[in-house]
Amino acid sequence: MAAALTAHALGAEPAPLSDLTVLSSGVSAYDGDRVSANSVAALKKVGLDIADHVSRRLTQEMVNDALAIFGMTESHRALLGMQFDVSTPHVYLMREFLDSPEREIPDPFGYNFQAYEMTRDSMVEAIPSLTTALKKIKENPETPLL
Image (cartoon, rainbow, N blue to C red; front, side):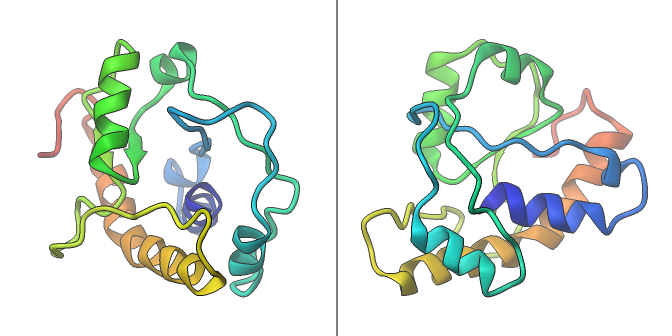
């Protein structure tokens, strides 16, 4: 959901943000798993279709090519650092740039549809601050923001 929402938002921005490629992957994901029906339904309610999405495990090549990496939880960030040689100084949580005590986005997998809607809404709330952060990263890719 995060990749589709972020890609949609960046697509409405002027270049160079609209030219960025947004990828979805996981530190514990299996390659080829289908997206959950609740994820599809939650994004369909906001006009996005992810029905063809399949999971992809994060690779070292993806990490090497990344301008920035945004995780959902601190455990994602910790696993990233343990499993990969991280070449970008820009590893953040998706909600890290919000003025909010809720910085993590819990995984709704296994919960009801309302949990998926809450997760979607938490991601949507983060996108303006994430877009601002990406603008700063594009301007100065070698300098961490925090």
